[in-house]
Image 1 (cartoon, rainbow, N blue to C red):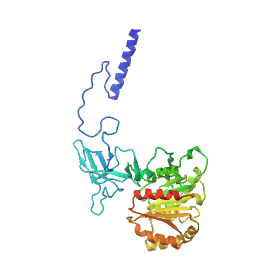
Image 2: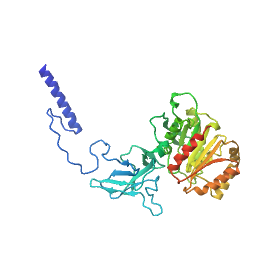
Image 3: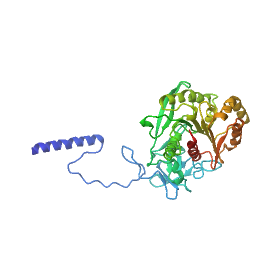
Image 4: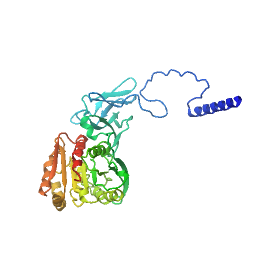
Length: 407
């Protein structure tokens, strides 16, 4: 028995050694030699066949709310961190400012920089620029899709941003990515759909908000950087908002000649003829104007002006964030096309919410747009904030808008 036992053990060691040699790990000996002392790494790049987390933190919020960024790029000659969300801390190359914060390299090829000022508690998009090429965080796990390309994201925690932060102590809804065929456009389309806590258990129908992104974004944006799902989870848990389904369409349509991004009949055809029927056929929805809403930011605000407030037979609630009409000819054309619908909206619309920042480059469109509302008897709830054309504002507009829905 002893000899048989030795034979099996030896065969097992031979098989294991053969396998390890095939995988490039080296053979296993019966008596293990002490591990050799590895030399200190000479580069910040990881070693081995499979990628693993780096030994450095790519994004590190500090105790004073400044943020340190790091990226490993030994062969690069110029590296910076860029962001379109915090121009007061990370410059955007406007009015003679540099585009981003320049980073410095250590002897192992690790580049780093710390913001010169604190970053307010919130969620932000950013990229590294390596020799002029934008790169999402190679060590990141959260990202936000733009109209084209992808951004890394990071969050600075704090009381001021808690309204849009994941809370482990409350129930959470779900976000699904849905694909549908648009016969109107002849293409496959995509949307993100939020369903509130408890929806998956079945039973009961829900009101629906159609929430559209801006020109630089995608249907992913309202959740990946806008945190609309966390905002609603927190509001619903606090009893401040009604449980609702939120459908986030892709606001862009295939490029074609003479298609206006902000007044695009292709988007209208897909939205009204394809997406809404798809949602109402596949989700438990309450299909009446008092239970439908539409809102959007920037380009999505234009889509709402063209397809939400002009369809009071479909929507009882609309919200326009950071968008308006100010060109006299555009205003005349808009009213000529939609005058009767706007009159009906003035009589039946339950809520028209309009929000903009004082520093927004579209601020001058506010007065002409509100004048349109007034001419057609539409009473708006107006929210004029500080700040400009940023997600910092849009998250807060949504947090103020959502509790007003379906009351």
